[in-house]
Amino acid sequence: MDTPSPKTGPARVPDDFAPALLATLELRVDAELGPLKAGVAPLMTELRQGVAALHPGPGGLHLPPQRQQEERVRLARVLDTLEDILEALQRRARASQAED
Image 1: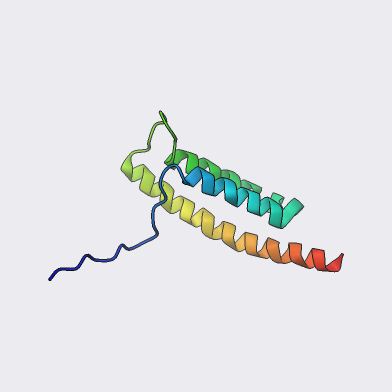
Image 2: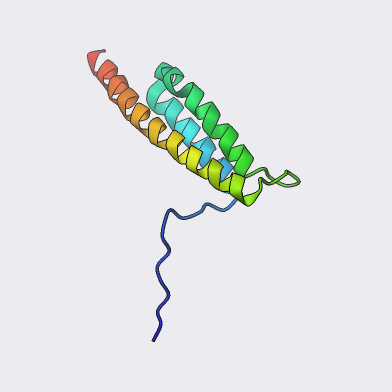
């Protein structure tokens, strides 16, 4: 009896959820880091542009499949870098709060 193989890789987010998830991330970054969020502003801009390219919304032009894959790989690297920087900034923000 054949069983379906499990999906590999990260789950794809439906097109209409990606912008909402990004907005939630931006709100959390703002709430957690306050003025230290400036340290990730360029990466957040890059992430916002990438999400817009992959999820153009109604009537928008979709990237060709090869370009979509390239953009996903690029955004995965951006997210990895962003995660590292956010963790460091969050530690700094908490240390600053403890000093006050």
